Image (tube, rainbow, N blue to C red; front, side, top):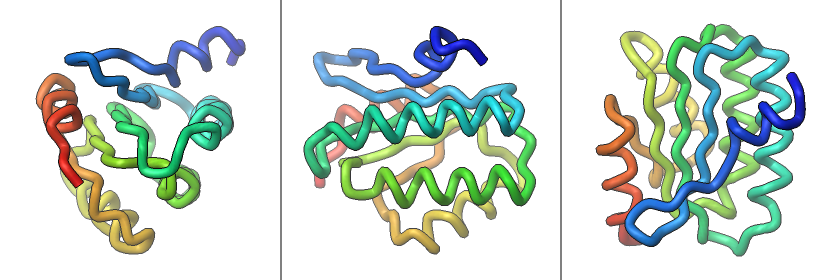
Length: 128
């Protein structure tokens, strides 16, 4: 994947005068998802602790052991920097995987949504 495409899949957007870091993994193969993760880690690690709102899109991602481990690693890495996180595109049995990852990493400030707009609204209203 070209660097320019990676940068479009991990970027800050503004919603109601608040910045949200978006990670778009939708329709990606694992090698491309890994590139996005590496880029995200570089972006988020420069931010103050507990300051970042994140919105992750995992629509049509192949959920296998490799992606589960990649996601778990990203969630653990991002934990100190994230104030709150929203995830869209999780359906069916994958919700159980999401629940397991959040339990294993101790993340209580993550929430699933079916709609991106609802996710953004929840994020900008989030209070610690």
